[in-house]
Image 1 (cartoon, rainbow, N blue to C red):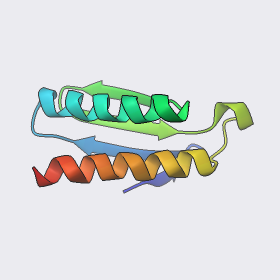
Image 2: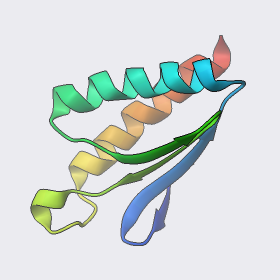
Image 3: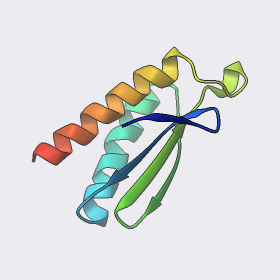
Image 4: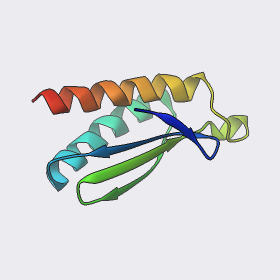
Length: 82
């Protein structure tokens, strides 16, 4: 699901509609805030794109990014099962 793109972990997520996309973003936001690690993301209707890097470390991919990517993936898979 995740790929290295422009020195970031990148993933694209597609949902049934805007409400599902926004629900996903809300879940990710709560987890990111708990970690103190916030993604760069875009949302256009039912598509969300996320780029993860650690700004404090010079915009490189670190364990923080890998941990958050795993959490994001779990949130996505949980929503797809509903």
